[in-house]
Image (cartoon, rainbow, N blue to C red; front, top):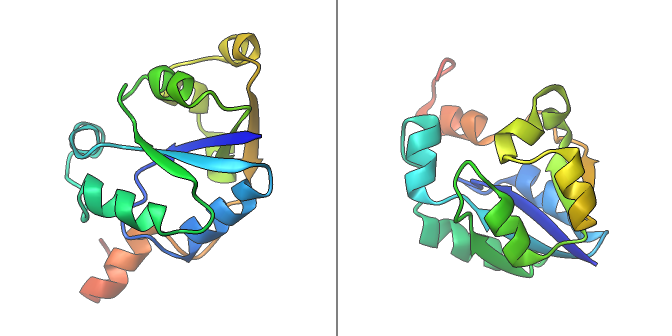
Length: 141
């Protein structure tokens, strides 16, 4: 089974590892990595690490089989179709947000593609933002 997930994966940390480990229990994990340009357009600032640096770190993780660019930006369908997954894994922190709108598809589209959506439990207490706070030694970032 092939598992698709996407994201920025900036400042790779234990939460990322935990998410990818859990995702790998369901098959071979392919990460659709957000490009630097997309991150700037979405978050208003560049990632700490470049696309190439983030891709190298992900490819060094034993739970990741391959990394592809999120070529569609806000529309994840092109990247998803290029991977051809059986399953999309996302963090459970998305359960209270509109993941479908964020990714540019709906459940009917997933059904037509034969793709299941799986929420992986979010690792509490660790995030890229929290890591940046620790590095900078500040409480409000």
